[in-house]
Amino acid sequence: MIKLTFVQADGTEIGTEAAPGLSLMQAAVNAGVEAIAAECGGACACGTCHCVLPQKWFDRTPAPQDDEVDMLEFVIEPQSTSRLSCQVVVTEEMHGMVINVPDSQV
Ligand code: FES
Image (tube, rainbow, N blue to C red; front, side, top):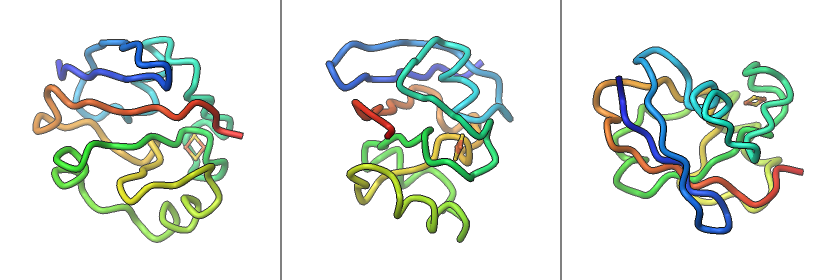
């Protein structure tokens, strides 16, 4: 299992463990991270699973596909290390990853 920590906008942390192959979005929802609304269920069509990765973790994550890049233009306050959590697949290399969650998705 891969250890992940979701840091909410108020600074509180929600730690969880996820199996490789799960998406970060699924891991967040399973852990009760309410700020990850994931309204489209992971279809890369809503942008409500937006998260921001610390640079070191962003660099270790496979680059986003074009449809994710397009959708990231519509999230609130996108950052240079923003990702749609539904498009990031958990791998062994992500053990210990920290994921920052925005205050609002809409
Ligand atoms: S859950 Fe809708 S874009 Fe990720």
